[in-house]
Image (tube, rainbow, N blue to C red):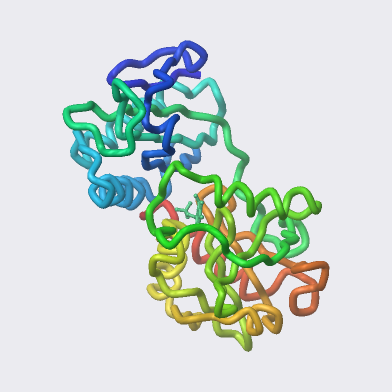
Amino acid sequence: SIAYLNGEYLPLEEARISPLDRGFLFGDGIYEVIPYYNGKSVGLMPHINRMINGLSIIEIKNSHTADEWKTLLDDLIAKNSDLGENLGVYVHISRGTDTKRNHAYPENVEPTIFCFAFGIKSPEPADRTKVHQYSLISTEDLRWQRCHIKSTALLGNVIHYQEGHSSGNDEALLYNAKGELTEGSSCNAFIVKDGVISTPIQDNQILPGITRRIIIDSIKADGSLKLEERTVTMDEVRNADEVWVTSSSKEIAPVTKLDGKPVGNGEVGEIWEKAFNIYTAAKFDY
Ligand code: PMP
């Protein structure tokens, strides 16, 4: 696997950073994961723009234009074609390496830029009987109030993910102190009731997911399904006909079990299949 570190391409296992890097000491950085299927990316420019926006929010210097980022990532994918047909690229930018451990943003440091590619699985079949069915737990969202920033400081997410994982489930669905759905520990969330799709509004409680965005935009452009961005309560989640979780790696994953109980009739829903087909037909256009 060929990685990119601060302007150089090198074998991943040879990449080295300083322990004084603020990414290591403070989780002070921004990251992205972007999928490529047979060399074609999904949401590359939206991912790059979210990353540039995140850098600007936390005042990390961005040394590349969006087009330069695109070239860099496309090149890294091309250099890693031996890893398989379907690849993900991980991009990590930390504030850089200081000379001491100090909370204040250091002046005149160069951000650390690290990227590597890895094999990912092929998309799931658009078949209600064959697709992997997700089993989730729900738990109160105890992360921070800046979930719109795609920070490398993922301990809050990791703890919630582990709650799901260690109990034999695929993910943890999170809700705030008011009992309103936020998102999953590594994915956004949607519900379906009586044919209407709903997903929480994009605010500081959730990551502005690129998959979420592509789903909303492609469903609106298609016009055959109803979709609302609004507050969704956990009572609604528990009474939903369908629940989905979405991310760049999961695409649209149907959830058929929540806290040990079936979601809806316990089978993958027909709106899932329609939405997945609309998404699949449109995803390379974003
Ligand atoms: N929410 C969280 C907390 C995530 O970690 C992710 C995936 N990294 C998502 C949502 C989904 O985002 P995307 O569709 O851009 O992969």
